[in-house]
Image (cartoon, rainbow, N blue to C red; front, side, top):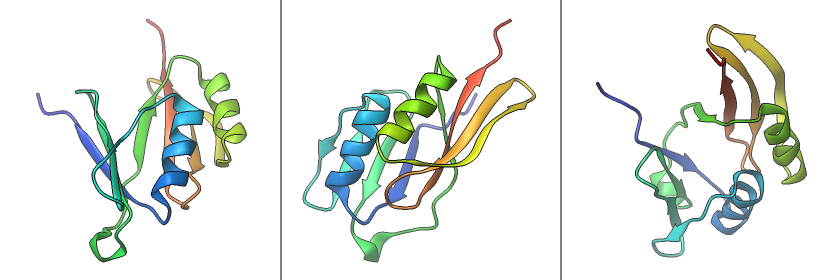
Amino acid sequence: MAKLNYVELPVQDVANTKAFFSAAFGWDFTDFGPTYAAKMNGETDLGLQGDRADWTAAPLAVIQVDDLEATEGAVKAAGGTITQPIFAFPGGRRFHFRDPNGNELAAMQADSH
């Protein structure tokens, strides 16, 4: 079965974006030059593209978490902006937020069965 394995976001400030995701989700990034960094753990990886010439339209990346409320607090504390508060959907709950670059992402918690 196919699965999403990489999401690349256009970012205005790679260092600031790395700090945001580190504070909000505890992620570590590897730098690949001054305008690119990536979180690579073998699951779904995240690239931060700081070269405007290589920007593409950003998809909505959804990050699965264990504690949605705690994550919402961490996102706010890290400087993110909530764009849709927590809501239920078939299979779980999620909220949407913008990172410091204005990219919209979502965090979700699956229903326990």
